[in-house]
Length: 183
Image: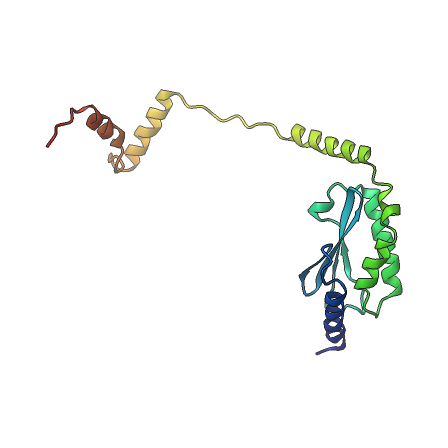
């Protein structure tokens, strides 16, 4: 086991013990962790993924999660700049806990820029763009004669044979009209 793997295994144990019972912390796999930050009704999730040489390199930081779709771009940039600045100081050391904690102290300040009016305006803009780009496709409607010709062509392709059960509707109709004879 390499030194990086040993440090990662040790950090996993530490994170599990620290965040045991914390519903905002989630371990997706042995090298990917998420933490949910909440300030009133506003919230976001930071995902940290370790590379094979972590902690000798910075972990991958991810805010492009479905949960964060309403986060404004300036807010995302601010979060990433804070966490990247902190990560630069801790290269070579276990830093996942430190990165999660550095944001905890600044959540109110970060989310102050996340105004509901801007979020609503952004959501409406995206909705308008989506409705404009979606134009219903017009399906070609076939007339009865076109359907009949297509059916005849299909029969010709099979050597004039009709597929098995082609007239089952007629049989059911016939049987339903026949008088019932008690036995």
